[in-house]
Length: 139
Image (cartoon, rainbow, N blue to C red):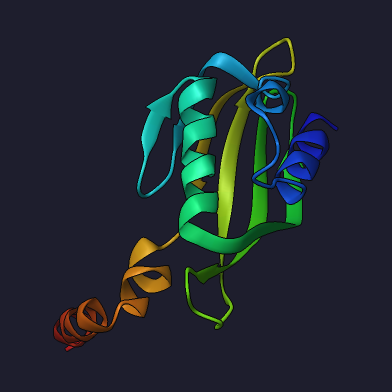
């Protein structure tokens, strides 16, 4: 149930949600980690999402599945977005491992997703080099 409320928060995220709303879910010392960031504290987490809204068009999370016990949850999601100035809609899936404290606040949120496949390979110059590396590893 805790994870469902948290997942609902992510599905309704938008650039107009204030830090006050984030403080309802994140403990002051929450650790947040994804392939691009590792920060501590609700203010820093809020800043990551505000930058996301600044750098991407219409980013949205769609929750696919939640597995939870008393203190730990795994949340499978799909992230939809467009790069600024581009019409093509992109998406990729990932999983978040979330730990809650006894006050039902998030104390750790770690995202697992493939940055190379989902971001770097969409950048033309990097795409070429990543494909070369994949071919070398495969052979």
